[in-house]
Image 1 (cartoon, rainbow over the protein chains, first blue to last red):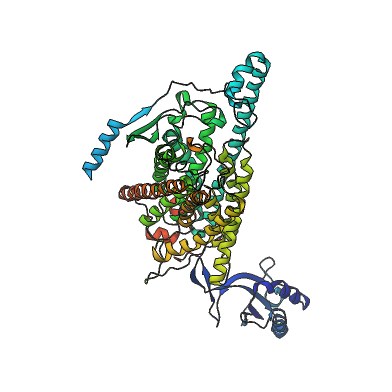
Image 2: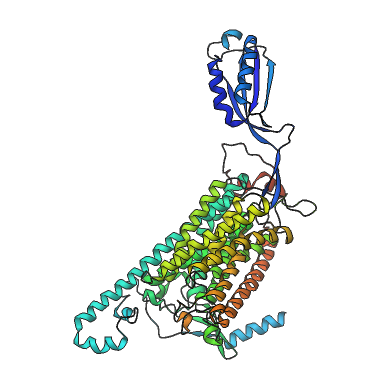
Length: 112
Length: 520
């Protein structure tokens, strides 16, 4: 079992959700996050004084799938969220030790 | 200095006179206000006093009808004035939203609370003595057919001329000032005064203790504003510069560029100087950091509410629903706001590459502030010009205040109200075109500016402007300095960094959200 964590541009979330549903993923958790990468934010002018927008708003998507599906999920994320411009985001894949569904107590593979 | 003050007091006692005419009585029900006398000479074809006296003998029914017509005329004027007063009252909501939106989320509750409570404090302070000081000697309002019980002005005599300083009637609206017309005037003047009082809450936002704010609230609404307002609107000495010294119609301010806005803006400057900049506003080398507001949609909604209320502010200042000049006034008001917003937009766009939305909002208000004095005395082209200059002046002033004076004004109150208030009254002295204002301040003829042949009018405007800057700045600066000794003006640095909501007003504006609590 793997957890796929993707940091994406906020306006790509709907498209990603639909495409992931189409390949049969069961669920996802999303959160509003802020951060920066290699570009390190950008500067703006407010009332004649410069200020730095250091953290850019992003969406973090977390999906847990069985190991065999990981590549398909990554492909779908790239297909959905690539604009070719700076700030498209990143994908992280982490191992998942165990899963438990709180309502029924089902474990691991059954609980995905 | 002490000797000088003592001398001044002695002079006041020796030469001060309280002018009192035969004692009129109040009319609490309003049923006896508005009579045949109120139709004499009000339009081109209206009967003269002689007509009424001679023709009335043969036409008794016409006299009775004239009585009703007079009452209706006064009633129409009263309805217009009150309705406009209600519009101006709603500007308090505009100020609260604009100032709240242009400051940070961690102080939103506190900023809104100041804008809210200045309404309550202002009404009480003005009722206690502010109204009496301002309007106690105005001698009545002709368009309202009454108010003659306000007949007591304290004046001193200098150079053989009478200088009205403050009114002495109408404290707590008691005695014979329990009068329908007087109550109407109170409401209308009170909401104007409260606009002044709420302006410094913007320049002093995000670091001012609520305790000292409350004391300030009573001081400015009960004493400082009423004094200057008396000099311009309450038959005081600035309004008499025309009668006494031949300077045009005296200091003319139709709806309050100087009386309301400059007073607020100058007080805002004094307060922000005494209080000092917010933590993190200036870098070690003195260059300013931007501290963006937390809710731009809220701020812009506030500005629209202000513009809506401004129709009451300006058009209502005819004090007469029967004065059709109100259409010119309202249209000029709208044109100047448009020109102000457009000019500041273009200025910021050209200089910084983007049309800064907070500066557009400020420019919009700057146009409104500037046209407030001259709105009744100019045509549409000049209204656009005055507004456009106001929009650019606003931008230059914001940079000057922040970069050169190193004064931190979170919402631009000093530049919007102070600088453009001054521009407003001066522009009247330049551009008043002589189409309106017959007999204004008791001077024959219409109001004309420098470019229309009356340089005296411009001098009167300059005197009024300088008087405002010196009087309001000195009094408010000294007041804030002294107040600070007894009740500190500024919250502790820990509270300022944490946000003032919890420590000052006991509740967080947005408890459902995690706030980014940073000193920037």
